[in-house]
Image 1 (tube, rainbow, N blue to C red):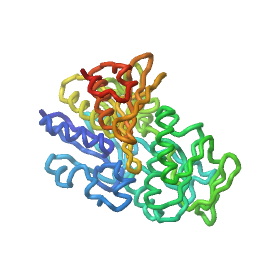
Image 2 (image 1 turned 180 degrees about the horizontal axis):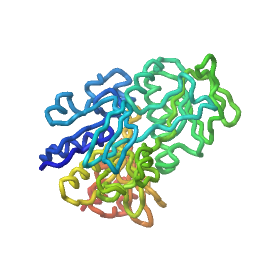
Image 3 (image 1 turned 120 degrees about the horizontal axis):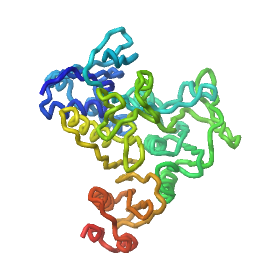
Length: 406
């Protein structure tokens, strides 16, 4: 199968998954992949964990060895900054003035961490986000025992950052402006469990507490004034207040956007010759429009889009799952708890294992499994099959979860 050139803007997990799937399907069209970073596509989750700690060399994070791109006739261009897209001419213009023509375009532009405004000290040295290799390389020098770290944001990004810093022996304070951590993404039960785990590991968690300003000295952060007027001394700050979809290129060239690049169930944008996949894409799901920020969705949606490009209009049915590693705790999430109105807390068979089951209007929609692989696997299977768990079995912690699948 041969067609005109495919240009993929973005050389992350989604862009690579799409290119690899096309080649696996024996699609021989020319492919050019444009990556803004100066390194080949790599895994992001280990950056703040094994890579930052020195347990894993960067080469082990690469999604493909360098030779793979040439062997598969994929023109990978690094440090390639896209300036604009001309949809009428079907051209991508790079900042160096070069032009890449396409027949089909894929936007796999990902997302960018939200930062603090400069007027409250967001531009001071010692203030970091955690998203790319460069962020991890800059942060590595701060990970010294006894240093004082402020983490802003009590979502998964902030909690994972706090866990890594404690492993290095830093004195960690985490602030969350909402009334509890994980307010937007998890139940109060899950939040309480994770809060207790972090406190056991020595993290100071301040909820209902925002940041008024960071205080600098000679251009470097030295303290933080909190919303209640308290001033704490800090050596470094990690900002974990979420990410924004990289949809500006799409907006500038006239594609429909709205908290991401709007796509249909086939990953097509408002321009039939242009697709969007991964963290940047806003897709239809269960009557809602959502962005699923996960490695799993980046791969699955990209591979589904590749199938569509080969002429098979098969709709992508997202089956979300996520995970978060903090200390020796593995949190696995199956489903998407958007709009949940009821939860069931279940103790696991092993000490320290627990799961939270989410329901919306009486229908099972998600499960959080904390050190409980069996609950995760069971919940995921139920969701994949569109089945409802027996409430009596869920409520009885002594009952075998296998009964839910009987």
